[in-house]
Length: 204
Image 1 (cartoon, helix red, strand yellow):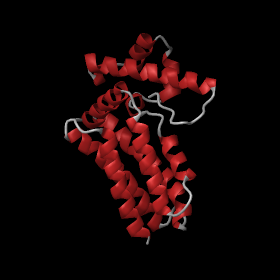
Image 2 (cartoon, one colour; image 1 turned 45 degrees about the horizontal axis):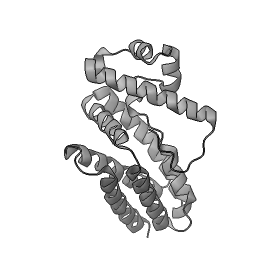
Image 3 (cartoon, rainbow, N blue to C red; image 1 turned 90 degrees about the vertical axis):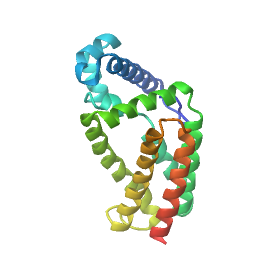
Image 4 (cartoon, helix red, strand yellow; image 1 turned 60 degrees about the vertical axis):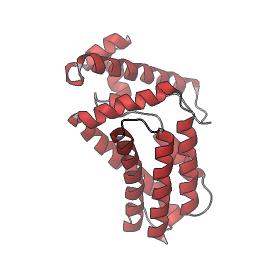
């Protein structure tokens, strides 16, 4: 993915992200042509003109080649930059997500669509996504805790983080179920509106 949304990164990081994008694109092309289960890391590395160790260093697992994107830090930065109560956090997050996704070129939306198909259809990829979602949820807890005024491990914060993640996940599943015809930015915007209402009601 290519949109930085105002985040400044160094040359070394840009080169790393460019390499990861290339490897992911090559992997998806191979999965599309030959089937996910028939493609090895070694084959991906050869077609991407890198070593297998580079693929493992960047992604760790074959499943991660599908689930990886660079936007989790963006979302956390949006939460951290908000000034006010938990409602303000969700408005900042909602607006930031919508702005980010609407700025994507068509190729970026196509990339997400392709990845979603493997997440939904390949059990190993789906399981990897669930593991990563748990890590993401823990991160959300730590971001929300100061605004809620409770510890990250408190039930209130845990439920708020779980609600946020559930709304984002539901939006992606809804988008897929509708045949990817709706604008992803609009679907995510509506989901975050609902998430904000739910979390504010929980913590009030």
